[in-house]
Length: 186
Image 1 (cartoon, one colour):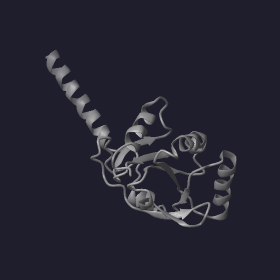
Image 2: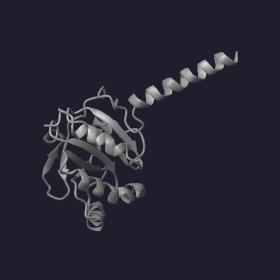
Image 3: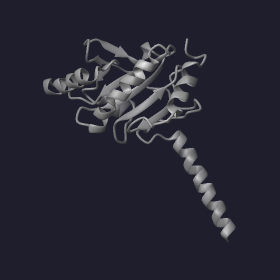
């Protein structure tokens, strides 16, 4: 009996890990570190700094992209901005790009709050305005909390997600090193 319970527990644990590696906690899309994830949905949004449209497709095949969903009302989102600036600085010349998508109404008050974060943190990556929340809710099917980071490999597949801040340690750097040196990144 005890052996059966152990086998059942181990089987449940195995399925739990298997599902976590494929099912996103923050998105309904499939995220798979082994390359079997969904293709990242294409989008084009207004860049806060320039007013021009930036499309995900501009980077595919050239860079690993980390899409960061955040908002000015999210304290954790604002607290992690210095870490994201640091990551962008360290990896910008190594085929990596952060695209921050703000869940923003785009009104004057919110734009002032975004500008305050840009000025305070010297943000060095594009902030894209999802004023109708279509990219977040319809394309990327967000279902959980923000900040949410989705890592897209050079072939356009969703390979990693982080709900909340990037975990400390070297795993993130090892993952970026493997992805940015992939033959898919030209």
